[in-house]
Structure formats: structure tokens, C-alpha cells
Figure 1: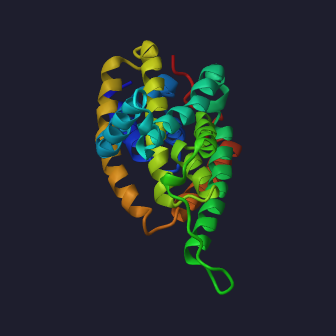
Figure 2 (figure 1 turned 180 degrees about the horizontal axis):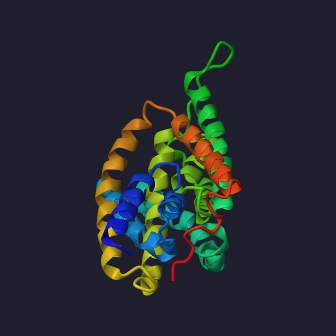
Figure 3 (figure 1 turned 90 degrees about the vertical axis):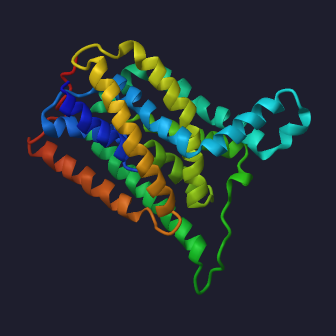
Amino acid sequence: MSWFESFVLGFVQGLTEFLPISSSAHLRLTAAFAGWDDPGAAFTAITQIGTEAAVLIYFRKDIVRIVSAWFRSLTDRSMRSDHDAQMGWLVIVGSLPIGILGVTFKDQIEGPFRDLRLIATTLIVMGIILGIADRLAARDEVGGRHRAIRERKSLKDLGVKDGLIFGFCQAMALVPGVSRSGATISGGLLMGYTREAAARYSFLLAIPAVLASGVFELKDAGEGHVSWGPTIFATFIAFGVGYAVIAWFMKFITTKSFMPFVIYRVLLGLALFALVAAGVLSPHAGESAG
């Protein structure tokens, strides 16, 4: 991998990680369209450490508060009813599905799941689901002639059941094209949470899973055509771009809907199907990485 490739892929990772459009799909597609080797699951997981570092810094006050309350709750029973302490437990519980399924289906994730036809399918299907969830949220917020405005849930309403559902939604992102934020935000909206609450918990929930995945894949870094230098460079690029995207996205969702992302996902999926059907792209384009 050249330094230019690592810059482009790091930029794509940072740009798409927090938007509901799937960073893994875009890394895969960028390599396929450019005629580069597929960067592989190890490169993707390690560069995600950069974007998660952006999450740690952006949400540092929330994270310090939650971690502190969680540790105190281990020895102080009175702290176990504290919302921040409960959030710590809920993040742990919600991280279990992706951890278990990620290890179980590791070979499929790094192989068959990277087929461009599957990516096109997940882009479209999850785009439609996100659109339905967003529409329901908008209906509750606006109301109508025969409907009263319905108050949506905040993170204070989050319990073990919803935490696990969020976790299984996040686990769906093991398939390229689904999108970690897209799946968890869609799940949150369908469960009745506000856009801001669903997005905030989505970002917090991703921290343990992404960091663990990145550390787990460190042993495979530097193998094949992807060396350590470009991987680290891409990780730093992903961090800088990712931080800017988080700041923009958290402001965007307070007043805007997810429909632009829904339309983009569906159009990209359809275009990808068309390119594969026309023979412009092979379903396995770019999979020659070592």
C-alpha cells in the first residue's frame, strides 16, 4: 500500500465511520473503484482505533463521568442506582453481542461478507430501514391533525432490554454495508428514542467493540501488502477527519432528518448492482490483498 492510498483510505474511514452509510463498505468500494487491493479487515479495524480516539476526546466528559461512577458502583451499593453507573453496565452488556458474533463469524467477515453484491444489498436494505425509523421519529416529533406530539425516550429511559437490542443492532455492522451507527441509530429510533439519544449511545457503545477489534487485529497488521507505516498514517488521518465529522453530525441531527443518508445509501447500492451486472466491476474486485 502506498502512502497516497493510506491517506485516501484514512480520510474515507474518518469521513464515513460516524455517518450511517458504512465505513467498511466505503473502504471496500474505494479500493475496488481505484483498482487497489482490498485493504482488508485488519486495516479497517486498526484505522477505526483512530476514529474511536476521536470519540474518546469528543465525549471525554461523559466518558470520565460514566467510568468513574461505574468503578465506584463496584464497592458502593448506593451508586448502583446512579444513571452514569448504570450506563457503564449497559455499554458492557450492549457490547457482548458484537464481541461474541465477531469471533464466531471472523472467517466470513474477512471473506464472503466482502462480496460487492452483498454490500449493495445491505446498503439498500439498511437504508430503507433507516428511512422508516426516521419517518416514525419525525411523525412523533411533529404530530399531525389527528395525532398529538409524542415524547420520545432519552438515555435515562435506557434499560437492560433496550441495551441488548442496541447491542444486537450494532452486531449487524459486522457485515460490510450495514453501518454501525446506521444500525444502532435505526434500532434506537424504532424503540422510540430521540435522534440525539440514539446517536450518542451508538457512539459510546462502539468504544469497547472497536478498540477490542483493533487490538485483536494488531497481530495481522503489516502482513500482505499493507505495512505498518501506512496503517498508522491512515489511523491518524482517520482521527482528525473523524473528530470533525462527529462535531458536525451531532449538530446536524438536532434539526435535520436522516433522509439524505437514506437516499445516498439506496442510490449507491443500486449503482453498485448496475456496475456489477454490466461487468464494470467484479463482485470480488480488489480482493487480491495478501
